Amino acid sequence: MFKQKIVAAGVALAVGLTVASGAAQAADKPLKAIGITVGSLGNPYFVTITKGAEAKAKQINPGVKVTAVSADYDMNKQFTQIDNFISAHVDLILLNAADPKAIEPAVKKARAAGIVVIAVDVAAAGADATVQTNNVQAGELSCDFIAKKLKGKGNVIIENGPPVSAVVDRVKGCKSVFAKEPGIKILSDDQDAKGSREGGMNAMQGYLTRFPKIDGLFAINDPQAVGSDLAAKQLHRKDIVITSVDGAPDIETALKSDTLIQASASQDPWTMAQTAVSVGYEIMNGKKPANPMILMPSTLITRENIGNYKGWSSPR
Image (tube, rainbow, N blue to C red; front, side):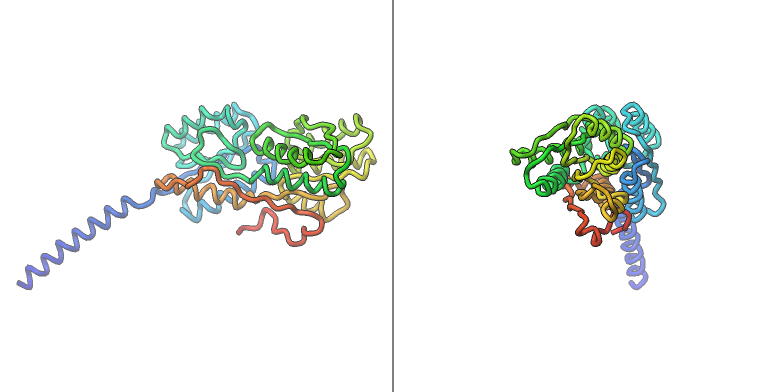
């Protein structure tokens, strides 16, 4: 009788182990490899995105392979990069699309291969989810600062950038603020300053040559703002209120020194990337977010509050 009980217990234990083993097999899929393609790894914003994503991925699996590449805003290059990720059998792609609509065939191809695609910073047609700053709000914050500084009256420029959703939304938010101020005249709003310091400098040199009086300038990102400030200095133009979007390390320096840059609506690329990896990992394991568009709030950084700003690089 005692022997039978031992045998029965052994069978029960074996069954228990089998069930446990089955449960383990049904557990979360492992995150073995991630591919990240961003606008430009020459921009510290995108470097922070890749670092934030890698940190979160390694929390999930310390042995995960993370490959980050720079598309340099080139669609053909980005298509090739996504093809390479598919060939490498990555589990998850974080995509900062060079063109939010034209990228769709590449996204569909990746998803057909069983890869989860999360759009980061800008939308991408066909992606499983998008994690980005509330860019309309960022544009509103930045341009509201200009409007208040100018007391609702003056000549302003919206220094545009690459035609990605983030930039379009920032300009939309900015225009909505200026539209409420009949005393504000927009001198230019359609020049693409390429999202770079050099592009901002070149665009600003053109504005300063064409327009004798400029009171305010909204640059769609911090590198353009820094370039615009340098151009104004070279041409000895003062009394221009420059604002932008990003909250980048360069802008922290600018806000603490003698520049025309007075505010930047901050983004949090570290948290954005971490959120994107978390959401992607959950989708891999059958848990879709309630809303596939995840918007992160922006905060206005000014000369007055820069001392309390955490900045991009501090993990949180």
